[in-house]
Length: 247
Ligand code: NDP
Ligand code: 8X3
Image 1 (cartoon, rainbow, N blue to C red):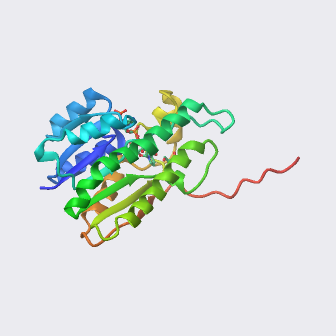
Image 2 (image 1 turned 90 degrees about the horizontal axis):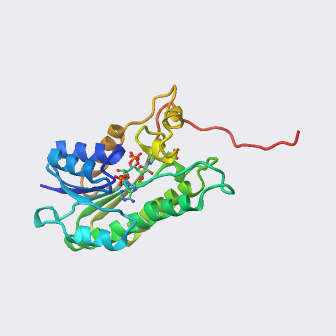
Image 3 (image 1 turned 180 degrees about the horizontal axis):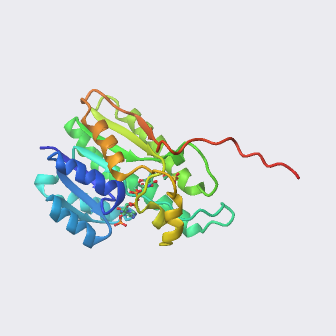
């Protein structure tokens, strides 16, 4: 039986991915900060819970090292924990928000990767699935540090592929567009109306959609590596470049 470690499993994509793999009979390790939710999920899915903040380097390494023997052989790591904070333009954005995005989306992802990866290389197999975003590929007003952090995730994923050549370890960057999770509630700091407006009148992606894509990538034969997968809701598309004209 294979083992999957999912970070950010207390809601949204992470929870949906955990549920999807549990229903396929995988052993699960779920990680997140909100202890009540995490413990309830772990109990329901017979998973091992790691209450952990990915921003805390020492805590991350201790959490991974603390895994009981039956959960310690991590076959798949889903680096999903992450967030966007705010949509102010760069000259007005809150620097603490920027720092938290960098600490979580970039540094946290690096810490968990570095803690889990040596075991995969030793075993000559494994798969790291990173949660990127369309925000890494297309800029938008207010995306500033969030898009930048996801561009790091994309390039880090591709560079991992280069380093891991010949090890048997696969790396995939999933790049979803608009998806209804707690993402916008977090971004707008609990403002339900602002969060709901993001998805108003359109059909966004769901956690289940992304869990399905993740499962497809992971369940492909070991010789097949999906480098990047960009997924948008059909209702989301592209606009023209913005041109500022003098009036
Ligand atoms: P949610 O807010 O629903 O989930 C985010 C998860 O990340 C939660 O489980 C949260 O758990 C966890 N998390 C946040 N900070 C930390 C931390 N410091 N340490 C550990 N866990 C943390 O949003 P999504 O499911 O949408 O987001 C999941 C990922 O998908 C993120 O990386 C996001 O950037 C990305 N994404 C989202 C898209 C969307 O439109 N929804 C589109 C593209 C990418 P807890 O608070 O309990 O720690
Ligand atoms: C989340 C998608 O467009 O809100 O990564 O940045 S978007």
